[in-house]
Image 1 (spheres, rainbow, N blue to C red):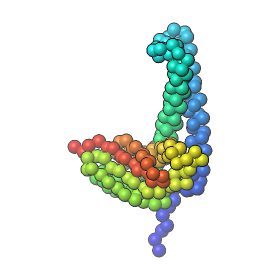
Image 2: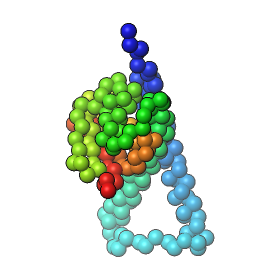
Image 3: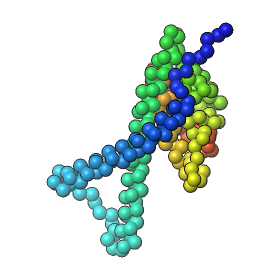
Image 4: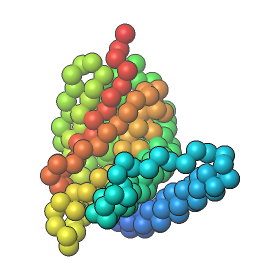
Length: 214
């Protein structure tokens, strides 16, 4: 009988770990952003940085001032979310690189880019998410689209605020997965960008953009 495939990630444990990690890193990102803004304000007060230009007409009317405060609050949330996504992707890259190295141990080097992509679609996906990619498309110019019709990290995600809010939250949760794919590709010698896209839960597509082959 064939040897059972070695599992590198425990599904339920990974789900719980991801939930807590997102919550922890969100708080950490908010703290880091607040600290950066405090340092910036201290430098402005000390005259080391120029003060930000006031928004034209912001003091002319109370309504304009309220709109300006709301705009700043929105920008603050967006900065914190972006910091959270970058941290999740960075963690995923370390995980993906190490898993790819384990899976490729003793195997010949992939000479073709498509072979590396197929390795991600089959071996990496099975090791991390217990299945293979449902669909793979490419324009043969360095762009590959991997589609998972029921992506495990977001398959059970929901929100009491509705489907739109659940989709918004899912875009954060898949950033670690995008990092895993990117890290695995980097360990295979392919440096590129991995962009996750979610339009209909629990489906998720990952667009991989690699340098055009010469």
